[in-house]
Length: 622
Image 1 (cartoon, rainbow, N blue to C red):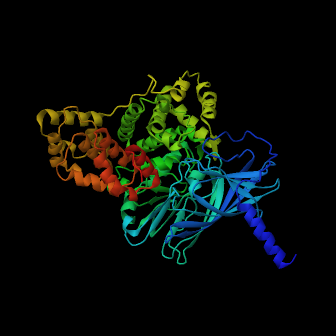
Image 2: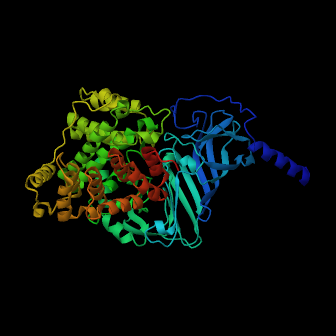
Image 3: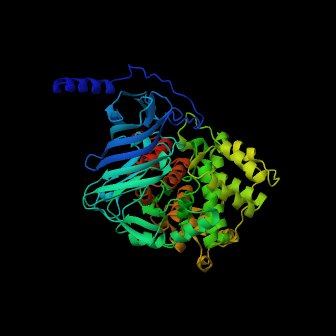
């Protein structure tokens, strides 16, 4: 073949790879029941599935683009096609075993994106996708220097849960498909890249970083952050990444990390991920934390200066067992991740800080659950643990039902069978299902077979999991400290004054309970007296500030500069729970115009996860 014939052949082949779906992809695949149907993924893993990813990408801050190649090892069951999930990606070229192959992008769905359908043969071992992200990519948040703590360099972070990984990597984006991965990431000189993998501890001068994740993880746990970062170890397997001005504060706040790991291992077995680090991200990060394996992503709003909000770290650590080690097979089973994790978190907090602190955390969650059930009064099916999220965004199921009803179910079960038996059951559950995924139905079968039937325990499992609301046989959680906070509040209401010495040693949980439970007769004048006594309006504790601002909106309180502080809080903080609570309060009290005026200023600082939620809440059209 001459070089001119070869060139013509390549041109024709490249064109045929990119053209629209005129060529049908025949399939003679065999079926298997290893994977269940997932309404939120186009992948057909029972026919062809990815097992390992070798990622090679460059991060371009000037153009706000990630570009490169995703190279997959695959297993095919005599299938003629491999299907990956994509959304808002540019697909430039696809290869099968190093040779260009035909591909097509299917119809676009607003939630799911488009299937990338790739022609393979029975013996195809590797597929490579050359791609780039776009300005619509939802997983990525590009921050300019002014949006960071140090205000010197840009920052980038990803957020993959639930189905956003497909917006920055073409991938089979279902939690039941676990993969190992290697990555090469090129970033601008002077910045550090870290991932949910083995990580560097110092900035590399040439900006070239290599990563390895040897344990198989679900795609939503793929994570990347890039910025001017420093690292400070707590001990040889725990430590903190943060911007340089934040590193000492973060290290001091999270200095109990190793103690938490030891407490968790004492409960439910070895920590199987070698390293447990935390990165403190800029305040626009949409969640309190994200349990990316080996490297938890965390909001700076948990840094209160007194470790009072570090139950979040215990929560993300607990995910190393419930979520990362044993994962919900689909997003309908999300409670298996979060209900177990809240239970585990509270057990860690009890082991380290005592029963009273643990019960206060649990009671705050119980209050959240009551509010969530009320919010779903028109759609009670959303209060089931096992959901049907077909035709819905899986994000709709990420609320207090999964977290706090799931926790209450497990706590009630523990009280029924006894803690010793329940702990032994959970330890065996994590061990026997390590590095695998599980459906609700499989868990119920395991529960009956390994706990309830051997101990001859009758328990209304189906009512808890498959019915709406809260069954009557729920555990009752009490707290003497909360009762004292309620009594202090009643005394204040009746006497219009408060003895501040009674509150000297209160924890964050006591203050939150005190503020959240203002009685019907509470007035703006009462708020002013409390604010003068405790300066809640200028609290440096983000949780206390958030509940105080909600009450200020509820009670039409405007003194002490609270309106300015609320606006600043909403512009500065992107944590979805916090900001949605305040925007909901504005909406509840017919102050949508006021909320929109703030939101228009704040929205550019929000990750898409938060912005999409508030867009829907306020009816905002960008």
